[in-house]
Length: 306
Image (cartoon, rainbow, N blue to C red):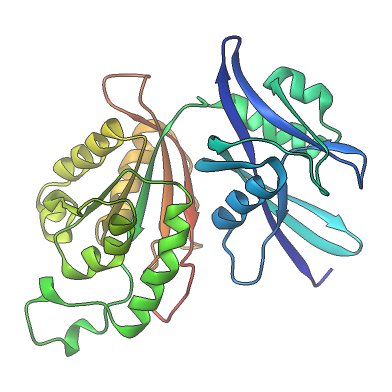
């Protein structure tokens, strides 16, 4: 099975007087009940594909929330992987179409008996294990900014390189899939440039957070942690752009504090490539401070040499 087919989908949920409900769709071509999902188009990332497939199959424009799991199975001799997220509808309505002729909003427990495939039932089980309503922080490492040794000016003012600009352009639609309502950045030009277009898309300014810069974090890591938790407590979804000297140790601290496992390199280090994103999900109702309940690493949408 040398070919790998990549796909993405979501547990689309909404509140009802009886509690939370999720959307389950019937596909007449297969005569099955499944979660909305579909293959990635060329050049797409999983978050973008998940939002597109939700619109195509359910008619709803949706905002992505936390990452759930990756399901792997074989189809016609090829390996297939499906990345699943949770998502909420923000507009639209279902209209029967060629792919889906019926959509039902059902409680998670009822979905378990309606869904055709064990893999979809497992995804729903994961959705039940953690709070459905979480805050999302998209923790971004700034895009490529050229060689520090070749820059003769103030390092705070070192701009993105051409490759970094391309990475920032690729990040823009990926971050937009989560519909952030605020954008924060360490006070470094390369960090601000990485997320400036995202802030422009939602009509806000990039807010500077000194505790999330390498120099300030090194002298006071607790202030950096408080800054991130304050952002998580203040927004449903926010983008935060920081640096390679901040993201791994900050995530290590959070993960150890809240008992969350992180994807790691073979060396045991937390990955944080330039232009990459950590999707962090926080339960804001568990204690005085938001508690990290899930973390998922998204490599750069447009990889370049380190």
